[in-house]
Length: 123
Image 1 (cartoon, rainbow, N blue to C red):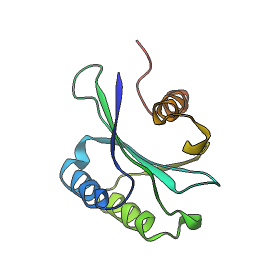
Image 2 (image 1 turned 180 degrees about the vertical axis):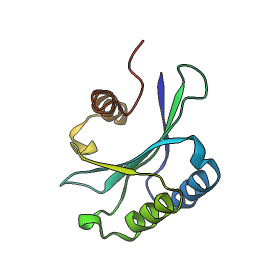
Image 3 (image 1 turned 180 degrees about the horizontal axis):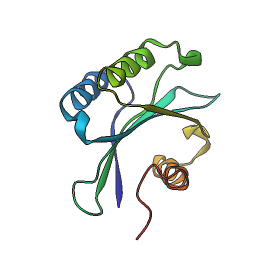
Image 4 (image 1 turned 90 degrees about the horizontal axis):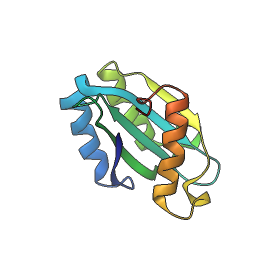
């Protein structure tokens, strides 16, 4: 089971994300940027499962200016990941604004991440 943990929308959460990457980089399975044409990018930090079937996915929801890879927050996150030798996966997705509720967006992302073998399959 995966659990999306929304850290926020890109303001003070950026420093919490920095601490997660700095002190828990060995637990990070994937670092993922999700961009679209309508809204700011979303960032996912997929952690290795703690138990057999529990996997945390930390997210900064719709809060990172992407600007073709030139946004300040984007560059900060990218440099933190590179410093810890974490590869970054990037996807173009539907905008969170296309969904009635945030949970529907997360369900959509779960499907994309499973299809691309970035999170555990359903058991």
